[in-house]
Amino acid sequence: MKGFFPVYGKEMYRIFASSIFYVVAFIFLALAGYFFYSAVAYYSLLSFQAGRNPFLAEQLSLSEMVLEPFFGSVGIVLLLMVPLVTMRLFAEEKKTGTVELLLTYPISDRGVVLGKYTAALSVVALMLTGTLPAMVVLSALTTPPWATIFSGYLGLFLMSSAFVSLGILASALTQNQIIAAAVTFGALLLLWIIGWAQTLAGPEVGSVLVYLSLLSHFESFTKGVLDSRDGLYYGLFVTLFLFATLRVLESRHWRA
Amino acid sequence: MIEVERLTKLYGPLPALREVSFRVEQGEILGFLGPNGAGKTTTLRILTCFIPPTSGFARIAGLDCREHPLEVRAKIGYLPETISLYSDMTVRRFLAFAASAKGVPRSRRGHELERVMARCSIKEVESRIIGHLSKGYRQRLGIAQALINDPPILILDEPTIGLDPAQIVEIRTLIKELAGECTIILSSHILPEVSQICQRILVINRGQIVATDTPANLTSQLRRTLQIRLQIEGPDAEIREELVAVKGVLRVQPGDGPSSFLVETDRHEDLRPELARRVVARGWQLRELRTQELSLEEIFMELVTEEGAREETK
Image (cartoon, rainbow over all chains, first blue to last red; front, side):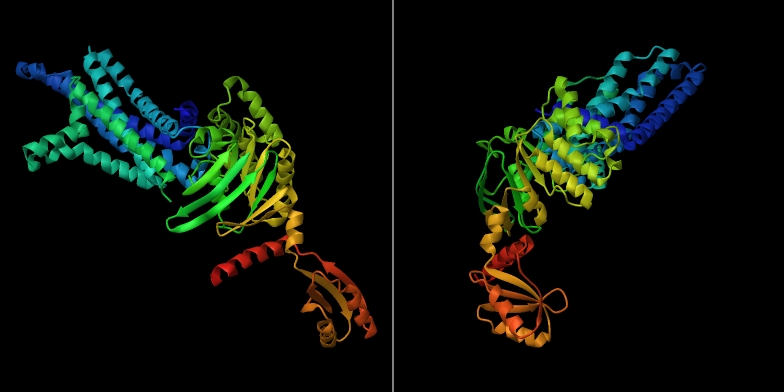
């Protein structure tokens, strides 16, 4: 773990010094704001109609009609944005050659990987925090279900940590940032929708596919359900990909 | 201080280093000399624990590079060959990162930064972004980061590459100043540089050590023939014939100016009086007569090509 704090500090500095972060954060927040606005607007439209229709009024649910779609959309925007945050972590250092300097300092590979991972995750978490004002707006209009909001944000954070761990592995595998981003995006999208093949794959394989899917574990969080299995899934996901990244970094010892 | 034993590194089937062994004593400046691709960078990378050797040992202050990489790295200040620094960081911020990575305690960090910046005279650019610095400043910054935390060993891979002559002189002076404080290994393919700075030269070619000695000894050992430069006014062809006829002369070549000749002779015999006598006897004007030292470049070429020739006859 030697070197975690120096690497973390350096990565944070470099992320904030580059324009990528500001562009990505701006687009992320603009899209999240748009999705929030449209969900709330739709909800208020239905609320007006419900004034004349008691049957519809029974069906109105802030959690199901605003929060669930909002968290779902933010998840998809993250899927698009996280690869752009993680792509440079190792790829750029390998391309420019700074990795030689970094790996000849008296710091451990583990410190380097965890430092970079935590820095990227902090930045994504910061972007998520940027959407909290939307919840403040919601609380000004009505009494929001805070527990569901908490669970939704926890789900977003856990899913981001999984996204970043896959992104850092892709970045360690190549020295081309665009390849790193494309591989991350492709792999994440595949893991996101892998459960859709359930009906084709039959019941046994299908349930495995659903369990592997990033989406199926995320959905329960957006509904306000905290399930330890989902937490375990993300924990294992992150551990697996960080371990693989460490191995890739160490592979310089046995590869030519 | 540094012990390297039978170091071999294979890149696939291609050997980059073959059974290289050498030692560097404390306080010594060793010049690592060789053409591009000879295995200099590979050796230095093994010493800095960036890559491991295929076989053999490298020990730094008694610690094996493979078993104690972190301890070894803490003792080394390294300037990589293509010094690439984080171009979006400021000089001060980058050095602060290097200091924290090298484990300089926070309380001493500011003082340490001032010290290395003063040492490498980069204080005036401390708040500039590295990407905007000139090559000379960047190279000095590279040396500054290597000096952080006072490592007992400095490994500089081609420290003057790509610099203009004035900057080269600056860097050389800097390295010479550091000489008393630490053990230095310096690699280069530029001979005058190595001969000026280093106490001992290690010539490496095709992954093997070809020669190791002081610059002076290397020159005298390899001088098998003596070259005498003559400038004579007279009919060129006749002069040539006359010179070749002298006993002990191996070869006569045209020199670098009009009516000048380079005579190669056996180094054990001094033919200068005999040559002068002959020329004067024929009534030609002898303008110049002097022995010519073999330059380090020529020695280097000789070593390298000799090794190559031996290789091909195998």
